[in-house]
Image 1: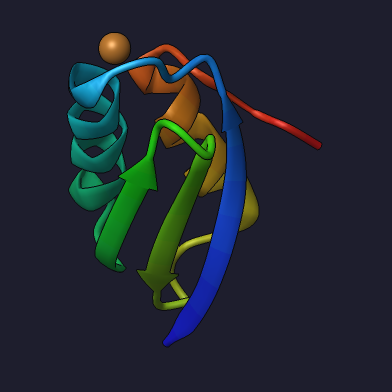
Image 2: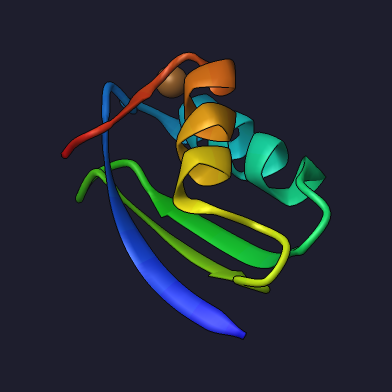
Length: 69
Ligand SMILES: [Cu+2]
């Protein structure tokens, strides 16, 4: 498993946290995610053989937020 911390812009409350985590957890290959809206970070643990950086970025965007470069 690979662990990564994404910097996500636009999260402002607990609903944002849940929305981002749900989208990430919907990706098969993502084992765990934990968003911190105060810090603007999301920890993700995933199988890098099935999940790419683009997949993670896409899921965050699907939730309505942006991954900082
Ligand atoms: Cu919110």
